[in-house]
Image (cartoon, rainbow, N blue to C red; front, side, top):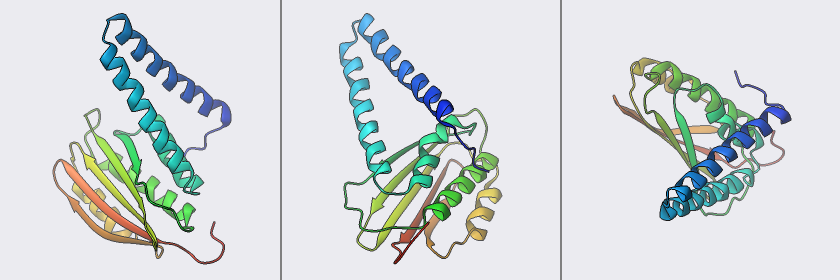
Length: 184
């Protein structure tokens, strides 16, 4: 179940994240690692650009799921990237967000805890919809949970194009067509 974030909690997490980043920059500067400090600043800029693209997709529930994922108690770290392509329509935000949250839960139940587990999401807006690539690297202890999720989690507006599960990697590709009319 998706945790509801109130404004104060969001601001606390954002402030904490920014203080950590500033401390990294300050620490590298104090060690005279100017090049590393510049790299951290560049990473922050790239991340901020992807956050802006994500929030501009007009998918507030899905964006919230991705933006707050690393604040929840998941056993993986998430990052995302949005391709530089025009976004041309609306998709079922609530269904996509629910699907993503269910994927996060299935991953949590399938992977070794406290390992270097990482989920990357690539979002590619196209002319007729949006393609989503979910790539996981880490230690998978129970493939059956993920397999069951993928086999039994069909949504009419989300097409599961391809998926592969290995001992240390999972790749999932889904596609959502743009909708006509009003979409929630």
